[in-house]
Structure formats: structure tokens, C-alpha cells
Image 1 (spheres, rainbow, N blue to C red):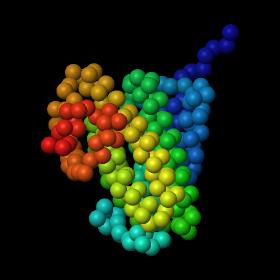
Image 2: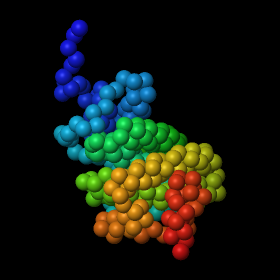
Image 3: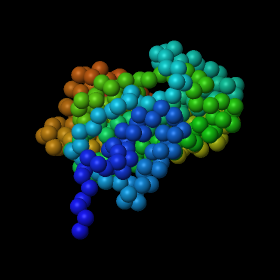
Image 4: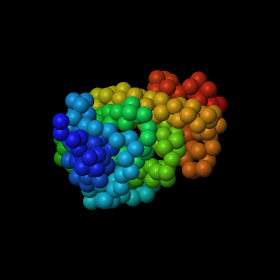
Length: 276
């Protein structure tokens, strides 16, 4: 019988967390999306190991991103009229940038936080693959307008919160999927209406797919937030308020998509607090 290979000799691309870190560091946006898609398939086919206790270190900047889009302050992102093709393209570009960031956020959740249950890593890998699909659909549609990802400026507020919460998985889960990304549940219907009103029904249909999937992504956040609070014997509502204050999370402002938030697993008490 041959000896089993030493754990340290396993290729990073054959171990889930190491592979997630590899693709997080990838700077080519298209290669990242394609790589994450292939990674999810490899995981489903049983081709990857999982070392939950591995101490990983990045050897490249995190997250990997292309030189464009140029990142500016949120208020410096130029607004364009939806009555023009360029204006609609700019909106689609902004949505694609959100999805690009979301790929990175899900990959970061996989590699950064050790010693979580196996299902935690599987959940966030699935989220990363679905975000990659969203990014690919939006960038393909953007090309129909004659533009590519990177042709407009963008902001980095989603990743800024990830950076703030990199040292605590509870804070990360509370304030990224359950706060920053949950805002997308509220924003999606009016954005879809704008695109449909402007006659871009193909983009509106893409947003229908994204909203359906994002409900599931926020539900993953709620699942693991509840699990972590239980593990640490914490009250979820009190803990969320404390974390939001500690990390200066953006205040929640309506109107809220209460139906989508309920479907994503927010409790009746949390929904009542939003409407109070």
C-alpha cells in the first residue's frame, strides 16, 4: 500500500480554500469568473479536498482586480441619463461591478475563516459561482451596448466593509451579506423598473435572475449568522446592533423589499425593526 501524500504537498488548486484564495487573487475579471465556475464544478464532482484548519497566506494583493474600472468615491461615480444608451450601459456596468465584488466577497469568506463546518465552505462556494454567472451575464449584455467592464468608473464600498471585518467571521457575516448585500434586495425592483421602462427587457430579465439568487445568498448569510450567534451564546438582534455601531455600518434606509427579506430568512422581529 502506498503512503498517503503529505497534506502540505497537495496543490492549492486541489484544495477548496487554497483554490478560493488563488481565484480571489486573480486580477483578470473574466478569468476569475471562469475559474470560479470551474472550481464549483470540481467541488461538486468530488475532485477537491478541504482543509478547514489550514493556515493560509496570500502571496498577491487581495482582491485581485483589473486596472480598470478606476475606483472613485461613491459620490464621484458619474450619473447618466437612462434615456441614452450610454446611460443604460453605465447602469449595467455598475451592476456588473457589484457582482464582481460579490465574487470576491464569497471567495474571501471561503479562504479567510478557518475551522467552520464543511457546509459553510460549500455554501459560499455556491454563492461565488452564482455571482460569477451574474457577472458574466451582465458583461455579455454590456458588450451589446458597445462597452466592456472597466469602461466606466466604479466605487469600492462593498469591499471596504469586507476589509473592516476581516478579523471576525461573525462581523463579516453580519455586515456584508446581511447588510451590504441585503440592500440589493431592496434596490433591485426599482432598478429593474428603470431598465424595463427604458425598453431594455433583456437587462430586466437578468435582474430577475439575480434577485432570485440573491435572496438565496442573503439566506446563506442569515443561516451562518444564526449559527455563529448560537455557538457564541449571543442574542442575534442585540449583537447585530452592537456590530453595526462598532464597524460603522451604513444605516439601513427604506423602502425595504420586505417580501424578499422575509424569503431570505430575516426574522419577524428584524423586519418589524426595519419598519419601526
